[in-house]
Image 1 (cartoon, one colour):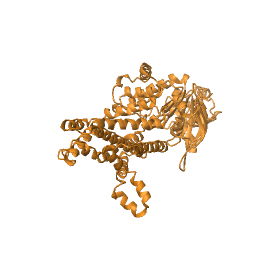
Image 2 (cartoon, helix red, strand yellow):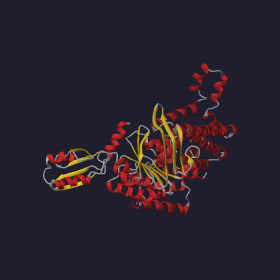
Image 3 (cartoon, helix red, strand yellow):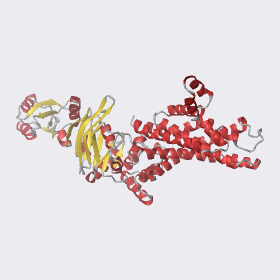
Length: 244
Length: 312
């Protein structure tokens, strides 16, 4: 545990010693704000809630999270520091979890900085703060799932560009599995039981149900399971590819 | 117990056999120099010892701890400088070393003391607060050395510790390695043959994944045709007759020109490293040849290195 904590602190501090953290947070806040007001019609709706704000999170994360996760392992391998890190008295799972947690907490910080939206709707009206809290939780879980996917992909390559593109594509598949773009081709070939199963892997469906205020166990299990699966894959891929 | 123990260690990358059945042990007080051409398997062997690469077959142990089965314990007792001294470029040297100290199990004041000790040993104090990215090659290498030494490990494995350093920095690093030699088992790899002579108690020539020679630097030098050769430069030109007479002395193999246009001297090569100095000196005195310079050579490591590795 102590080792995970040390790696976590180093990684989190690393975001803030480079412009990465500030650029990411500023862009995240600008995009979150502009889509909420201009695309989501925050004022025109005349409702005091944050649905238009959270509705766009999957699409924001689609390219912001890969930008964050692409460096997790690809950078270590490109610079050779992975050889230093993994010859210290630590285990690969400790390194994977420490890095993942740092990235996840970092997105949590970015998310927490959107609190002025929350304050604004409370000033303007009487929103259901329970729903908003659940939405924040859902958004945070979704970010974690995408980061876990991105971390595993990042361990596959020493090219950050490849890590970015592949992660974005995989996240898109997980967002869109319930939609016609994925279901259409699948239905032509596969029985309904399987296409429904694929559809139930849709990040969008689980996230939507959470931001409507329904936090169900199956949603938590879904996001927790995604993270666990890809963190496990991440450990295996680091072991497999570290010396390539 | 040997501090480093390697048995029949092999590593394949697909069809390429990088290391083919290496076995040796290293004890406290030994400084082993890995010599060999690029791609010989030096780094691969070191990476396996450090637990970064899993051996394809065979086993390796640090202080009795198997590097695969008991890797964590092995890595705790090991200080390792990877090739190129990688670090986290955005961190300052101070925060990087603090990170290493914490990972190595030091806490609070203990960690600061360990960092201070290492910084002191490699003379890093002047650049501690600079990002590693902005440091010169020499300082980057020293950050890597400080990282490897920080927990005062019993076993040190340093992959090209002096690569890219200027002559003064090379000297400092060799002094540092020499000062630690008596209490540790140390393996360094190098392309610089004089380094083996300067710091190593044992030289290991590796080529094509095999250990070709394992002996003292002196034994390596003794393999050179120039080992105990006598260099003679006379005042004026050495008469052809005298050269022929020297060539006929017992124990002399042949006489050859020094090879440089501005050098009038000759090398007298012995048979099987025989001690021919006194004979040559005596002959020159008897013939009344004025000697400007006469010295006995120790041997040329670069030639030995070439002979061994090219034959492999």
